[in-house]
Length: 129
Image (tube, rainbow, N blue to C red; front, side):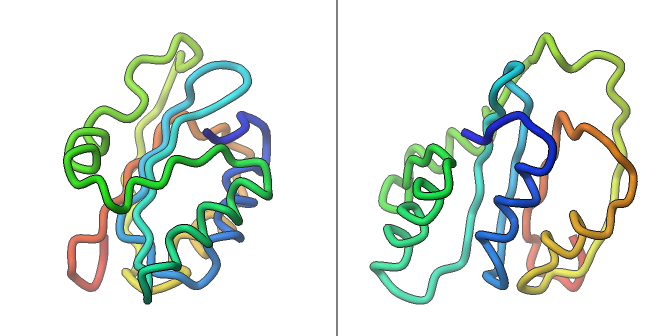
């Protein structure tokens, strides 16, 4: 869970840092929180637990699904659902380079004072996503 407050998505992105994000889904849930699903490329078997602990230490409730392929396959398509707070939404499509840190650079470059209510990203294995 991600606190539904200004800047929390950027704070989360800073924790990810230069790691390669392979998938990211975000949906506003209620006035206090949002549901997210994030795939992060890891270098070793113990790294996912360390990343989850780091998220928890910074106030981001975490469930590590690294070893649960069934949950990974189903949860990625069902994250969020309908939100009563998502009124008057506008959908935009952006392309940005697939490289470590690209998600954080994208979020940091947005000067608009938007409240993001839905966000889907998935690494397609190409130069851009």
